[in-house]
Length: 274
Image (tube, rainbow, N blue to C red):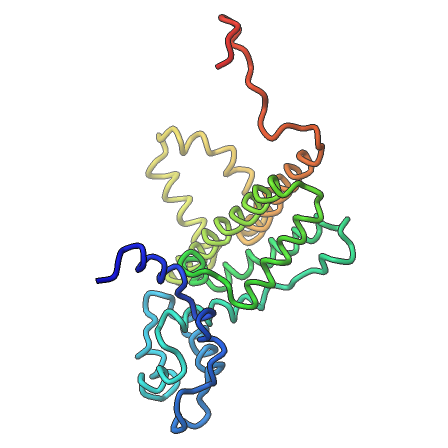
């Protein structure tokens, strides 16, 4: 009987990019359907995930899209998870990578370009967000993206200790922002409404039915500031301002004498440090 630790270790290694799976020949046998290969299967998977979402995706549905049997697909991939990993890496190529080696002083522009491309990827393909948390993300395109991030943040001059926090601050923020924006767009599409129509309808309903709620009344000033422009412009404005704040935070840490956290202060009543 396998020990729990052994099972956990195997799970941590599970990936289409490990154990030679990704380097496997295009099929396992010579009688594969004409014109079917792993690239075509992966492209069809991306199309289905974009059109119908992750919850509705199945190997049977994919086979129908390709006009083959489900077993034909398994000649090229071992599992559904392997195929989802291939699709996840395939779309990452859409993120344009800036030159992070020749002009290190342009790290601000490099971070903005990487963050903006990542946001666009998450919004364009809402199924990417949950899969990022499910897999190791060690496909060739994700590794190139990861290297560009490391180099751009390295160009700031931050120490490795602070670099980790900078990467987390910027790209976990983008992950959350892009995920929420993508979900909003999906709700608009499901309702058969544009972003502006959905936003006006939702805000109007909240203001009408929760008019006395303290949180709603308190947010009125913030909502008034969003009265100009489209919802798409609102998303872009909020993203730009938030990213500017992140970059300003990195700049504030570039002083080597600045402590990572404020020093403890004395309690004015006792003189003791809390």
